[in-house]
Image (tube, rainbow, N blue to C red; front, side, top):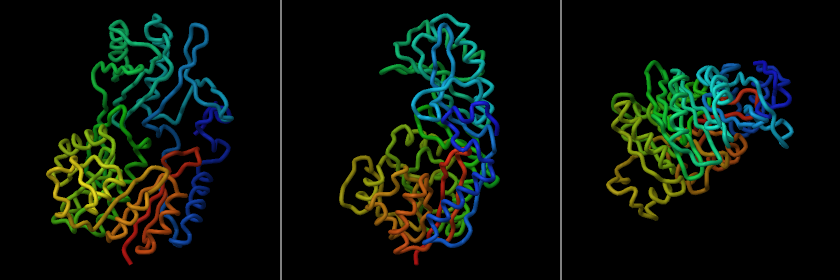
Length: 376
């Protein structure tokens, strides 16, 4: 990928390094961190070199009568206006510049105190645009924004302090082909979604491959537990290999989307519960009761496999103690340092039998990892 803003925009920090060299550097970094627990070569899943981001946020820079997109600069002490961004997916790229042109050619209604624009796109060309303002939005704004929706063939929302204006819908619908089967995901504007759908498919298929080793597609082998399940990104494809599934997530919006996605995909063996990881541990140990679990018989589950996909801070001690009693662990990590830290505990009871990296964020130092552990 080439971009005229390499070296000034802070979004891509590895601009001086070719993509193969970037991937090699990331593989070596994770291999070194995991070397005490896993000595085999890591499986490496690359990304498209450009047009890979399905989510993007740009500041709006006002200069005179005109607006510009802006990003934080590479020195992290200011902003730089941009004229291109080849990392965003096609559905975003083809709309973002038309949107800016419309804003600049409009009355003050669309540009007044506009400070940021967020994009959420799918591989099926749907696009949701959220315009963020430092002022209250009125019917005049809605009328102008609605015209934009029609002209750009997208969905537009407006946000300001304590205000959300939905003109048509506040979600997009993604369809991903995973192991020859299509899964449909409703993705809401404010909910977490994987930013790189092409690499996301590779992550899900890798996790599915691990599930196939221990689960049976027809009858299931044991039950499946998931923490940090989000909107069901991994839950739905993996559920077909187990008897019953309990998936937990703290975000109300993500749970709402997960329940919708179950219906859309005709999946009936998943129970979603709104619990933080620490609360899940308390509930399964029986040390605390939750009204949110009313009607769910936790004692009826016989978990053979667990998947965790924690934030950068990694797992808490209680969750590690809980999953250490489960035969198979699939650990998806967005921070290889905390993954290595957590493996010091988890490998007391388990062996790492598979490990991989997933390059969700090309041209940056960030890398996602996955390990599959089985009980000793």
